[in-house]
Length: 188
Image (cartoon, rainbow, N blue to C red; front, side, top):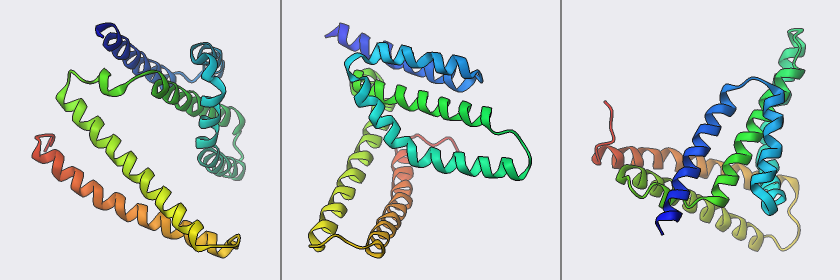
């Protein structure tokens, strides 16, 4: 039992150190060299974690990369090295985060600190709530459309869902801020 607790804490500290290293180094070769290390550490879960990583990054990184390329071309600047660097950095950090989530029980890792336990519980409950709301929206949309929806219906669904989550985030941030202040987390 103590061994498991120690393992979780050591892996969490290792994660934070690696994140600092990933965000500090501007060397493409170093960031590329981390990928075989991740393959080794993730072992049989590599392709599952790779799929999650690529799926979660493709939309965001595509928008950021294309925007940066357009701005660089308009200003006659070279963009290739920076785009490779930033995408490698984001890939490494995201893969490492998914790897941590698969190997570490975060609740056990922070169990000795009441503050960290509270913040983790707060974050986790928000994630579960948003996931459940998204699933409910998706199921309700499917049940209301017997035939495949057209593009306009899909856009309206996405827009409405986005507006709901945006408003919910603003409301929840106010509530969480008040809850944290009532537990002496304010630094004012």
